[in-house]
Image 1 (cartoon, rainbow, N blue to C red):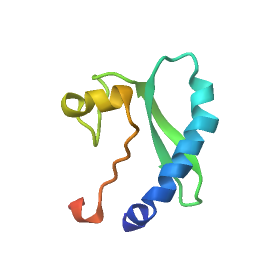
Image 2: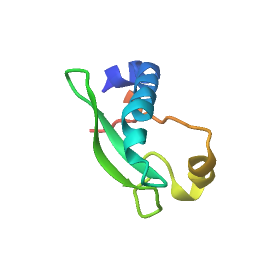
Image 3: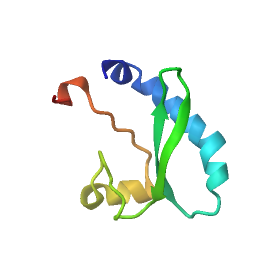
Image 4: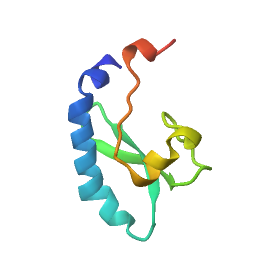
Length: 88
């Protein structure tokens, strides 16, 4: 997905706004959570999965052992897989 890599900074802003305006206000009953966001071919964002923020939840591009402090107190960090990292 080279187009995602090329647009990653724009996507960071769009996803942040989406989370702040649409998702977080609706999740006020949960103390913390993680979610997966999808950008459709029609350029729409939606949440496809929500899980508790806990070590039992996959950290995907992060590591619970190495990145726990950053995930708990910040700062916010975005991680994208570069086209060079993708193997088929």
